[in-house]
Image 1 (cartoon, rainbow, N blue to C red):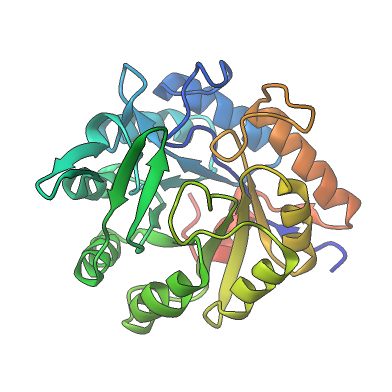
Image 2: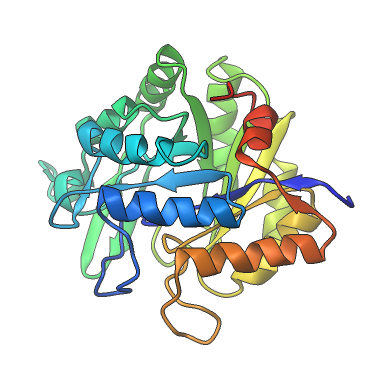
Length: 295
């Protein structure tokens, strides 16, 4: 394990928090691009991006993604991963005729057109509870195939997201089995959102091991951990041969409860990676590991 290259992903913004939650949260293209460059210089090799409107509400507007992606690519060769989940407000929030809020499917599809190297593929269907609002994220099997087909047509590599074991055993297994991706598969195992998303798991050593055991063969996996014990989850992922994701999308505050920054989060996990005898992968190394073309 000594000297193993670790892909560090930074998720700088997300689709839920706003500047009232943490004033360091970057939301506009120039803010996100500047923050991503700082994190790249500190050791991040993937940027997992959400887009925001000028009023900071969520969007999957490809023009916003393209502006952000262009600004980033002018600065560095970090791997760009655009979200097709979006968020639970702004352009993404619609009212379902059955009487509940829903994340707009049409808006989610627009996230494929930002010119990214990768896009998240959330194939699950669940309700998200945010404040006093319940919002349906509806990804039927046919919608999952539509997302996967769109990525394949645009030569975008999926980042498969799994919040619980059924996402791996059903939706992800079916789509990978259907030939919608080629190895190595990159799977983000998400923990700590069990109070927000139905079917999500809290972190525990047993839960992480269960998810790793269900991974498709020839997978690379990374771990996102929201809230405590996020450090335990990330260290455990490293010890299991995985990769790690940090950033304000996942955790707005440091261990002492103070608002943190994306740079501080990346610097901390890079220090841990090195203390464990590993090294953060460069963007070029990450591209090679993921089977992406070099820039």
